Amino acid sequence: MSTQDFATIRRLIICTLALHVGTFIYIRCMKRPILLCLLPLLWVLTGCPVSVDYPLGYAGKEKIDDKLIGTWITSDTSAEVISFVFEKADAFSLKVKVLERGSMYAEDVDDFKGWCTSLGDKQFVYFQNAADASAGYYSYCYWFNTEGNLVASDFALLVGGVDAVTSTENYRREVSQSMVMPDWLGTSFTYAKK
Image 1: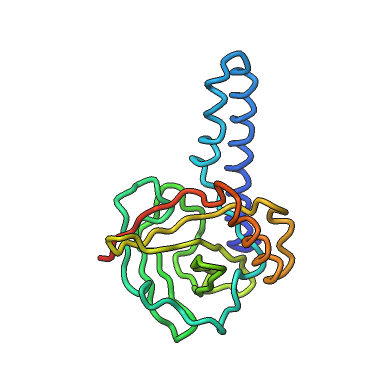
Image 2: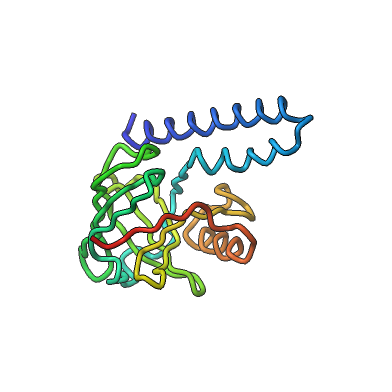
């Protein structure tokens, strides 16, 4: 069993527990509708990242965003990653090193390959375990705020879900269609350059 398999099993266990706890809260709180509002919060707090088998972009064909290069840190201790460094591997890829893990960090590795892509007016960065070319990909939407800080957010696939991701083209179509829907962006974290 590979490292990715263990990480996937761990994420599935966390998400399954969240579903059971959510169901329990729902059943116990049916007479108190205000408490039902806590269910979406439960999913946000469990932070179940999902890897997909296909990259969001065309690795090796799209230039990286040089503004990403550097060491980034957040003071938000609920972030999956507290600090990391982006290094330029070449004009089309990044070396990514997690320097400090958050409590919700689910991977067993800290070194990743990274690439950039864009869809419409949105920028994305996606990662893969540097030591395993068969590992899944993790994608995040990112932008820079007015202070020059990096803001990274996970996002939802709201049309066909992960099952619709059967190729890079289908993944891009799924994200493009989801982007026009309200609440497609998930939890975002702000990182300052160190």
